[in-house]
Image: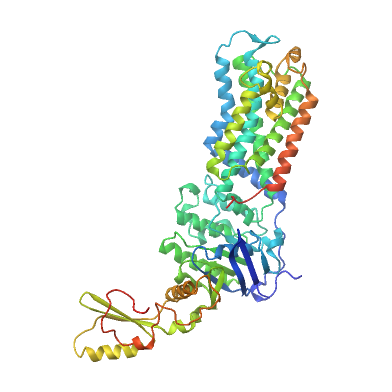
Length: 279
Length: 319
C-alpha cells in the first residue's frame, strides 16, 4: 500500500513516529515538573509521612515495644512503608483519575501515545520522588529521633529491595485503582479510605502484633502489611524478629506477596486501561 | 483515493440507533463541514472516523485504513482537535507546545505554532490562567503540531471572540492551501460557509443533505423574505418571487417611503434550519431526504406570495 498519493498529500513517505521510549523520557521529565508544581501532592503524599514522623516522634509514648525497640523506631519503619503507598497507590490513583476526567488522557490517545510511555513516565516520577522521600525520612529519623541507620550493607540492601518492590506494587495498584472511580469527583472518596484503613490495620500507628486477629488477617492480604514488616527488618534490631507474629521477618513471603500484587495491578491495567472517562 | 470513505455506517447505544446507514466520501484536500444539532450523531461519527469508537455496521476507510485497526503510523497522519481534551493546567503554553513536540516525527516549530494561533503574548502563562478561548486555540495548535494530512476540527471556534475566530479561520485557510484534508464540525453556519468546500447536514444519525457549499439547499436558495414596517407592525412575507411582492407593495403605496423595506435571501443558517424543520416533520425519518423540497419557514405556497391582507406582527408567514 502506498502511503501518500495525489497532489494534495504529496508529502513524501510518512516518517515513523518517535519511539515509545523517547516519549516515555519526555513524559518522565514532564511528570516530575508537574509533581513539583502540584502543591496538594507535595503535602499529602511527599511531606505527610515526614510530618507524621515528627509529630509521633515528639510525643513521649513511654516505654518500648517488644524486643527493646523504641516506639519511634517501630513507627519509622511503618511510616516509611506508608509514604511509599501514599506516593504510589494514593497519589497516582487520584492523579490518573483526574487526568482522565480532565481529558488529558484523551489528548494523549489522540496523539497516538503508547500507553506504556504514559505509565512509564508515571512510574519514573514515583521512583524518583519516593527515593527522595525515603532519604529525607531516614535522615530526619536518625538525627531528630536517634533511630539508627540500617546497621550494615545487608540491611541497606534489604531497604533497597523492599522499597523497590513496594514502590512497584503500589504503582501498579495505583494504575489499577484509578479505573475504579467513575469520575474524578469520586477519586478521593474511593482511594483515600482504602489507604487510610490499611494504615491502621497494617501496623503503622499501632504495633502489629497487638492488633486483633481479624485485623491482622485482613491486613495480611494487602501489600502495606508486608511492606511495613519488611521495613521493620531494616530499621529494627535482628532480635526483634522473634516478636513478629510469625516469629521472623518472612522475607520470602514478602517478596511473593508484593510480586503477586505487581502482577495483579499490571494485569488489571493491561485488560482495562482506558484513556477516556466512562460516558 | 478519497481521504474518508464511509458506507452504510451504523452505530447503536443501548439499542437506540444513533448513526443510521450513513454514506459519505470526502476527497483528499477537501474541507468538509458537518452540521447538525446536538445529539444528531456528529461527534459519534467523527469519533468512529478517529478510531476512538467502535461501530456496529458498515465500512469505514480513513487514509486507506480501517480506523478500528489503527496503528501509530496511521494516527501520526491525523490531527484531532476535540472538545473533550484537556491539558496539564500547571504547564505554560510554551512548555506544553515544546513537550508535545516530542510526540511527532517532524513537529511544526514551537514559536511559529504559538504565533499562528495568536498566543505569543501568553507563551509563558500557565494554562490554568488562560481564558476558554485561549485554551481552545492551544487545542488547535496541539492538533496541527504534527503536520497532519487529515484534520478533525470539532467546534474549533466555540468560545472564541470575533478576533480569535478570524485568526483561526486564517489558520484553517492556510492549512487547506497546504493540502490538508479537513473535517469540520461546527454550529456556526457562517464558519461553514467561509471555510468549507462542501456541507453535510446530519440529524437523527442520517445525512439530510450533502452539497457544495455554494449550491447547498438547492431549491431552498430560491426563497426570499420581503420585510417592511407600518408603524409598530412588522410584515414579513416569504416568497419565491420577491419582485412581484415588492411590485404589489409599491402599487399599494403610491407615494412616500415604505419603512424598513428589505429583501432577504436565505442564509446557510436559514437553509439549515429549514432542513432540520423538515426532518422533524418527517419524524425520526423514514427517508433521508426531505420529502417536500418546500419546508416551512422559508417558502410559502404561491397563493400567499401577495402581501397578506392581515399582516402578522413580527411573525414569519407560512405554515
